[in-house]
Image 1 (tube, helix red, strand yellow):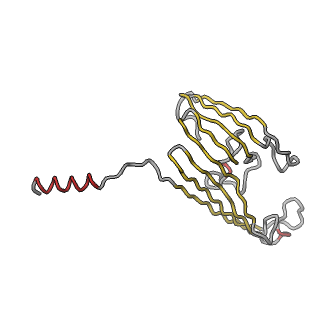
Image 2: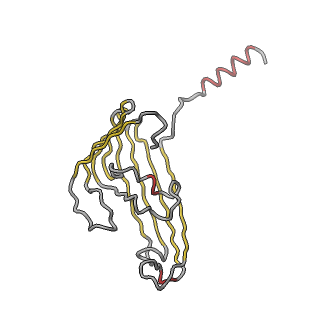
Length: 198
C-alpha cells in the first residue's frame, strides 16, 4: 500500500469515527419463570389448586432510559398468571418501581418516585436469576414505597437518607400499614474493596 493510500484510509477512518459511549441510553431486561407442582389436597396450609396440578407463570420486565447523562427513568413491572395464583382465572399485571433518578455526582444520587425500600438490600435478591428459591424468600420482605431518597459514596463510606411512604413490614404477617412519610437513614463502610457486593 502506498503512502498516499494509507493517508486516504486514515482520513476515512477518522472522519467516520464517533464519540465512545460507556453504555446505551436504553436498557430493557426481562425474566420469565414457569412453575408446576402437585400438592396434598388434605393439607389446608400447603394445598394449591385443590391438590391438582398447579401452574404459575411470571414475566418481569425492567427498563431504564437515560433522558440526559445525569437524568434517568427506571421502571420494573410484572405479569403473573396460572391456576396457582390468588386469582386463578385472571392475569395479574402490576408494577413495583417507577422512579426518576438524578445523578449530579457519585457523592449524591437523588431518586424520586416508587423505588425499593432503602432499608435492607433485598430487592435484587428476590429475583429468580439471583435467588434459586421458588418465589420470594420469606425473610426478604421487599417493599416499594413512594418517596424521595439521596444516596452516594465518599471514599469507602456510603450513605442513604430518604422519606418513604411505607414502614419496614412483612405483608404476610401484619396488617397493611397506612401511608405516611417516614424517615429512613443508612450508612456503611467498606474496609477492603471487593468485600461488599451491590
